[in-house]
Length: 265
Image 1 (tube, rainbow, N blue to C red):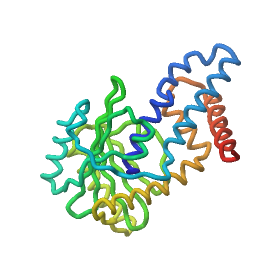
Image 2: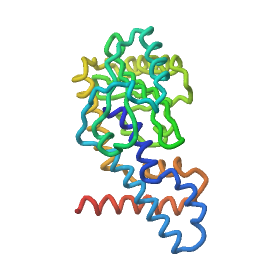
Image 3: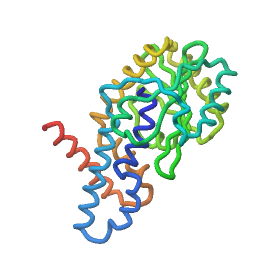
């Protein structure tokens, strides 16, 4: 599902392409012009690959038995489920996402999906472990009939990228499910009142998949055409205080060049 993948593909993309070691690489960037050019090229290629991972044209959901994922924190899943059920959410199920499984078959992962009583809020819970690094994420997603989305999440990495204007991302640095849910509900109501729209109802797995297709169409279009200004914003977040502005511009130019070459091929 794409709102899930928009988070976990960023995370996995960062790790799988080596993007998170960029700040370390940048320590050496001032040594020589030749070394600088090599590192700029490698960073640009890593980020370009990450962008490719964020573009999904096909996906499916497969029900799984959560008890088989013994390396994940199943108590985390259960605690969130219990809280949400007390707040009138219904469990849809536990799922693997086909694209993720195909790209990263050796990384254990499943998402738990729940829906609010009025079918307007989708909750996604997942624990992702890569080596010693662990991410426990809670996300709420609402779609509106005007085609816009709001996503509320505690995933920091998800907050480091740019989104199409139709998708409003709200990051809260908290592990409190109550805080996340309350903020999502409040922001959802503000959008309804300020933009004269209503929420799009979800009906079962088919409705969830169709919603993800609509969201993915927006994110795919944006990622295929992401401009230099937005790339620079992302680079400055991903590599804070580690590189000069000119190098950031050079990396952005190289990313755009790689994208152009790929489209020609």
